[in-house]
Image 1 (tube, helix red, strand yellow):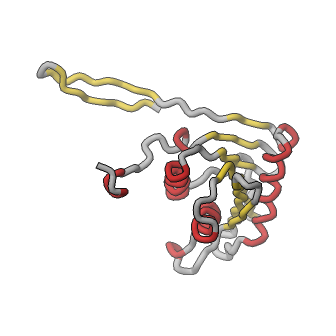
Image 2 (cartoon, rainbow, N blue to C red):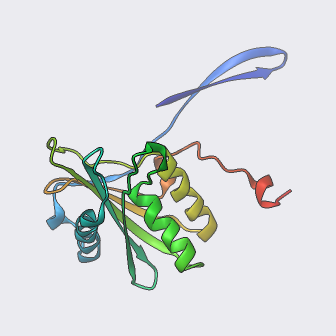
Length: 178
């Protein structure tokens, strides 16, 4: 996706066009994954059972692998006051932040399911979830591998949220940096 800059040089404006490259790996199905990634995707499917989504009927499950080998799951939780719900990714990440402060997240798998239509491609995280994931990466000082799994189909694997959110909001001054 191109990005345009308008710069002032020697009293004249000029424009510079820049591009982003998004790097990811695409797998046709679970059998192409290593055992750890395959298990994580399967745990994200299990997490779908805990989804509370009576309004959208769109279930999302996530499984998060910590560096100690422990897995934490999350699922989307809706509320009749729609803005009060929470996505699966943030449910899991905030749960880890509260119950396991200092834990390092290695990877996470996300999947979705609905009875209303067939999902043919992996469902990716919303911008709010990407922002939270990016801040977790910044806080722990290492990237998170993210697997977007389409039930019975392809998987997209991204190493680090920077590829998905290139203009992540980071404000060091809020953290006391000068």
